[in-house]
Image 1: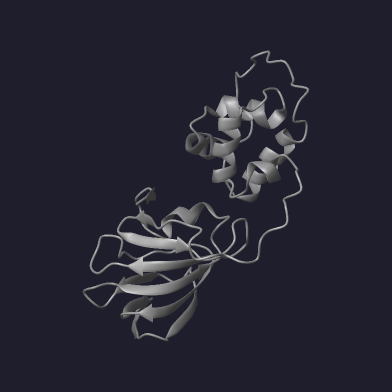
Image 2: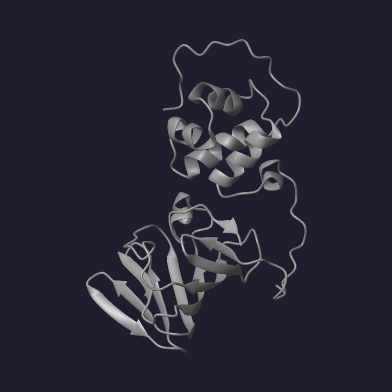
Length: 208
């Protein structure tokens, strides 16, 4: 639902950021989110988000940051700015390890790409080892240890050097088959999907 009954607040139309309003609505619809769902994720009321989408209220920077994360884009792209040329090389020491629900991962690809590339340490026997189903594709390549990959009814044990490439709509579960955990390269196409937050567990990622 895009119409909010009773929302007749006479907010003056802003004369700044003229392209943001239609872009906000287009991005929300492209992500398949209702006005209510997007507003809830951003911590806004549906009425407030409706005003932003119609140009009757100018978004603050915190609002733009929150909405850009929800819609899988950046504030610069949201404002129609031309992104700078991306550095094709990702140096080993550029990103700190990040932990999410027991998984530890390092960025192995550039930001703002359609593919997200990570180097991941998968722990042994944690609650993050649950069945997941979401849009996209995934590719994993085992570097160290052994990985147990459940795809539908089939279970595969991958040794170092083994890879797997699968549709993420297939119910799947990834976990280490060795007590010390496992190291793998992980590539997925979920960066611009609302389900991206599910790929590495349910906890909020935090710096170690």
